[in-house]
Image (cartoon, rainbow, N blue to C red):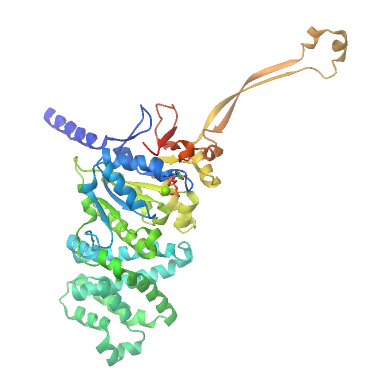
Length: 499
Ligand SMILES: Nc1ncnc2c1ncn2[C@@H]1O[C@H](COP(=O)(O)OP(=O)(O)OP(=O)(O)O)[C@@H](O)[C@H]1O
Ligand SMILES: [Mg+2]
């Protein structure tokens, strides 16, 4: 009994050590540990406030240098790759750095990776999910500026198309490639006449797949899948109105098309020399196609890596020695997806955390569609970030939000008052000062609920650069924590951009 008890304690002790490493010291007495970092962190501040070079830099160096964390870094700005090369050099982690970029040694084929990992059924699910994630992310970057609620129909219809054609490929060939998916969709019948036509049957790749799938030996579940696929392709799809069909097809093919071209084909459509799982052994994977430079291609590359990484980490099996692993998204609004809220809510138990940097609340609301659903998802993401660092900001909505989050406390205000009767002219004329003293004197304290940090305070924080002696001010808030240095739930912290 005693032995068992001892064993348990030492097991817990090991786990505690692995995650108790300090990542950043907010003050001499207040440490931010790797365990806390797995509860996710959010850095908010206006453009140029010092997010990337202030608190972001301090967190990144701490995660790499002290926690020896594995990381996936999504890149929006052109200097992000260079920044992480510097961070890795400064923390002795260059050997772990894997920048995925054209001409480099690192490539990842998400489809074959899933096939090898989970077999055809898992791969089908993942290809469907992956394509959905790409469509969602690419939609947001488009002219619409955000996924709108009225797009739900098109999204559902496109998802149905993907699912059926992925199943068809799996049933016919046992595998999926982006190229084959593209060819199958564009050779699908456009009418019932096509279905009956010899010419379509002899030239269509889609029909060849249907014939092959029909011939293959299938178990009962595959039989059912095949019946559904055949119904969809030969009855439902070809009887859609031409306009609807062409929109649904182009929703998909417009996203598959870039996947088959130059850079994306090279990085995600050939062999696999790195996998998201490598982060568990300390790899620092950087998506070397920043969205600012590579535009749509960059958006897709980051979305593919982020989706596959999240899926891999959700299935992570951990033990006492498992390393903490992090997702890093500077300019988070560029990469936000509807899966993030659920991921952030659950990732801590897999020793996985996310570090999200963004300008303010409205940008994330807009990125997630701007409607009620998007707002709820964004609020859930913010709520699941245990650490918040607020930098200078002049956005009223963000400042009000930050102020409300930090909270209100009972503040005591001293007040005093002295008055004498206005008609006491007689005493005044007679010089009877003692009589005048008989006025009313009152004093005391009143209790008022006031914001601990007023919204305007966030407009006064320093933003670094030479004018501020390279100092960036931040206000740090950690859920459920009272800082020793301030005795409060928040703490002003100075970050030195040059330290
Ligand atoms: N090398 C430098 N020389 C001069 N000023 C600098 C330098 N590096 C950073 N700064 C200043 O530090 C401030 C913070 O920059 P930083 O890039 O961290 O802001 P940010 O909050 O990440 O902004 P954004 O949202 O635009 O990415 C800026 O005002 C910038 O001008
Ligand atoms: Mg920045």
